[in-house]
Length: 246
Image 1: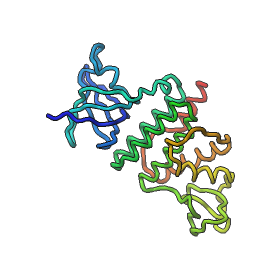
Image 2: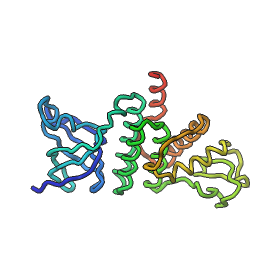
Image 3: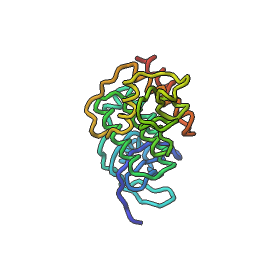
Image 4: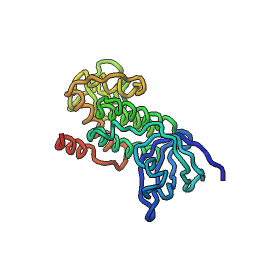
């Protein structure tokens, strides 16, 4: 059987038998794959330290298409040690792994891997994990084909006089079409569009007011509930846990 190399990030690990694990790996080349890590729960096994969630590397595997592959060894590219040393960052990273795993299960697109890798890099560098999470969430809406209208009014199509953004109406709302939709700050309207289009790899700093952070997060949460059908860890519970520990 031929050994293949794939670049990937472990998004989930599941114990299997008394000594092994099954790893779900989001790869650049083959999308989401399942890999058996034999004996990796044993203390002296060489795969023990590299068979865990939130590890980015070059995986050497016996690859089986549409079946369970087998892990041989891993060249670690990033262990995301700074994320793992920070409770908040670890919580957000775990949420992103869950989100992206479900998205990758519906669409085979290299961009999904690139967005996840870029996001984890930025969280590891110390950037605001909630804002980075919001960026990934917005980009995943595009991958799923349910992105909001953020170039023009979602009702009439006019790209002028945008007043607010509404998850119920699917995006921007102009002054002429506004009825009873909640008004958000002008800064939030601009930021949602910017975060949707930004290249994560090029971000060096993030300075956003608390008001806009809350409005962006509220819009995204409600939009996901309405249009994606994904089963995700409740982010509001995640935020409550973070605030309680903090």
